[in-house]
Image (cartoon, rainbow, N blue to C red; front, side, top):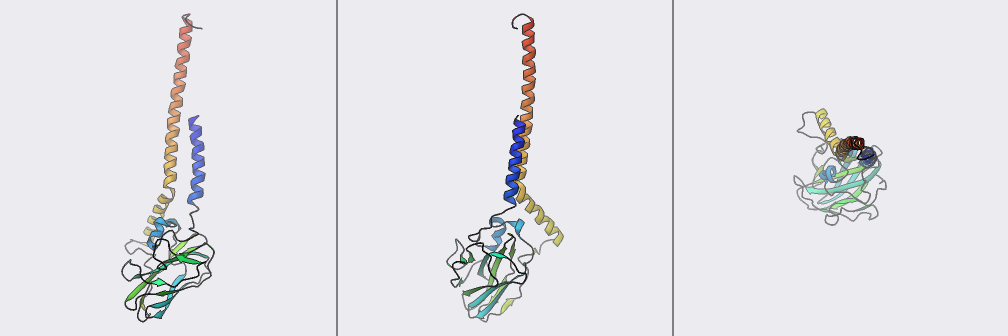
Length: 248
């Protein structure tokens, strides 16, 4: 009977894992991380990351350390979530702060200083373009970083935008540095590697459960076989004893 129970456990786990791994949490009350690079591991996961920028663009206007930041999209995106901040160019050190946005729509990312990193407050679809005001140092360069989460739970890393703080000019042209691996041998190889890694991450628990279920099935079959053999021996012994007149 144990092997049949194992099959039932296997079936229940299959349904549970399929439902959970195919429906990742959308972090409806804010980003699951305050760093764009960590979204693949502690946020929505690598399997939901889409290549390219999804049509999203960061643009700025302003000067002397005061800027208006816009997030636009030309594809009619259903934007639910956002994560945006600035770093000192060439570093990962966050800098400056945003003006207080609409508190019903945006908030400080949990764990970061007030208004240094902004994220959403709910999964309600946001009307684009998004507009933010940011202020910081008046000299040097600053790089704005952002990612966007869409209604279908796909997410995109936007291209970094580096600007000069004193005159507001784009210091370096936007590139696809967030969405390409310069060390990869080819785009096809990179896609295959990412697909395999994503598959392993997505179904690792499922594979483990299959292995455990298989072990239980084998152990149950062996125990059942041993019990059958023992039962046969017991019946044979009982007949033999009865034949000598000791027991009937």
